[in-house]
Length: 358
Ligand SMILES: O=C(O)C(=O)C[C@]1(C(=O)O)C=C[C@@H](O)C=C1
View 1: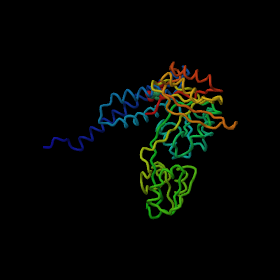
View 2: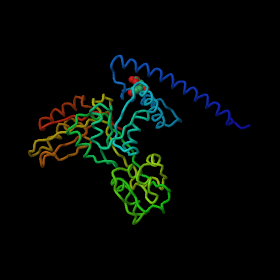
View 3: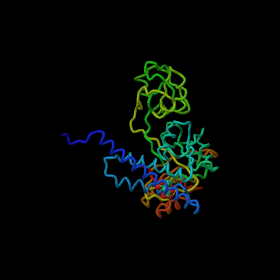
View 4: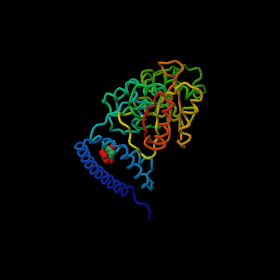
């Protein structure tokens, strides 16, 4: 006799476990609904990112496998997303159209039960949140295939929204078409940055085939859904959305291609213990100023993770700086350094302290 149990017996046991999981999920949902009533009575926020983080961290530390850590995170992200929707529906605006990488990043961060609303532009995403029609907005900020860093950074010059979180998404491009055959492709559509990221692959595999720039990878997929002789460079997710076949996967020239997105909201995020702070400022135009504006951070050992400059639109040759540092604005050394920086600046604006994405 074999030591392994037969398939029917194993499946019966799996069924019993699934029943127990489902019963527990419903018991959990009942408690969450009670939490919702308490929050309504006490006028508290329904969405509590710090509590969610605590749950993930506790479970990931507890998990001994073989169920993969990544799957623990995604299963519980959906459980919590659906639970929150039982308390109060949560609306999140993102830079659309649907099936862009921003859409993917938004789903990854908020789960599938949040109500995700596509917007036509970065200013429209900000406006939805400013007017209170959405609780959060998601926009690309760095190395993006959907939009430029500068558009998002410029928004903070006028807007008082705060950065609540950052999302890092590994961006991978597929070639998509109606037929799924490389020989049929007589034209390629995509966003200019996606095209740039797949340049070598295109030269080697589709030499001489015209490549057309469009506003987003999702729009490329939409166009191709009506043209049998064309292909789009877009995500695998766009293939499903626009009923396209995958001609080739992962056609980007560089692996490990990450795009960074920002989640903006009307309030400051709470401290998580491993945070980052973004700020913007403009300095007086005088000799040695660049050196002096970095000194308050260097002398206190505050780690700067990024600095960018943008021309001030109203005045030629004057610049605004965007700075990311490691730490929370309520950390004494960070607060002191920022206060010192203020002595050399026309203005300093804190854009938010938020958990560092891993
Ligand atoms: O603990 C809470 O405050 C809840 O609302 C419950 C819960 C959860 O499902 O665990 C749901 C949403 C919140 O963002 C955090 C946690």
